[in-house]
Image 1 (spheres, helix red, strand yellow):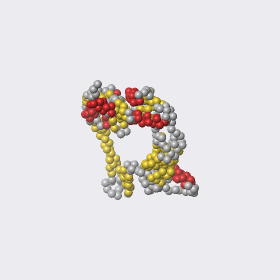
Image 2 (tube, rainbow, N blue to C red; image 1 turned 90 degrees about the vertical axis):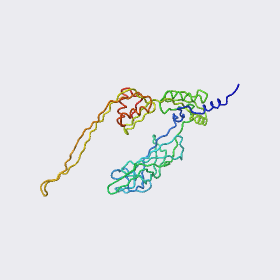
Image 3 (cartoon, helix red, strand yellow; image 1 turned 135 degrees about the horizontal axis):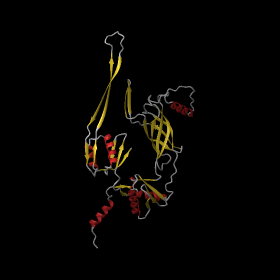
Image 4 (cartoon, rainbow, N blue to C red; image 1 turned 120 degrees about the vertical axis):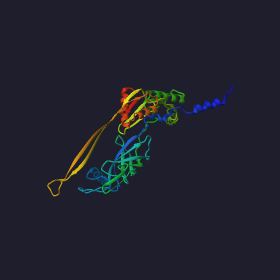
Length: 368
């Protein structure tokens, strides 16, 4: 029997090259039980340059400072009016990562909750961070990094970005470890990031082909159950290997995402349109109000100077025409058809909703 080296090389290349439209398993699923946990705490930011909370508007800042000073052995006489300008009350948030150990540091976000004008240059005092069960899992402290900037003079003020929040990199130290259930069970669930029965079955088949045994089973469109070795380190090795398996994703569901707050519209490449007709017309109402000053004709008379408002209202309506949108099978043609209507993002949201109701938009419409 003769061997063809070129055919063998081609076969090897075809096995090494990922299939078209393939993604790694780690990009498609979550491992059940392996997740972050939110942490929250209340603390004080000091060292501000006169931009702290107003004590008359935020009495809890003064109360918090008194409590902290009492713990340090300093007693503030009752009835003392503390005029604070360099202290601000803030909420501190962070995420407890999976498999975290005591002594590990995490990033925290500090957000003002009072009337402070800016947290720039401030230092967060030691703040306990609690979990959903009320236990303290980390302690936060450090200098804030605020990305905004601002200046004020003569009653005028200019500001760039936000000054009432900042971040502390590695600003919290984990003090209490969460118990982990990883490795205690021979079964593990892989949770798909998006519900898809076809993709769930492809993931199960790919894991079984890789392992050579029926260790994976697709339970539904969101969950794939995997049988793991009994040893903990063997489970880690097995998961490290299957996470890099290439999965043929195939055609995803056609979807249009509309953000009603920002006016943005995003659609994937599977969105198609059927033949339809769209009429578009814009109605605008303009209200122009001006203040006129009326003075007496002659001075030193009994007449008074008054301010009279003068309002003008105009209504304009641009003529809308009936436009025919041809059936299209690609995202490029869909965008070209929408641009032909001259639609703004706000108009486009209404048009897409009407198209969906009429049955000519072949996609799932989601409003966020």
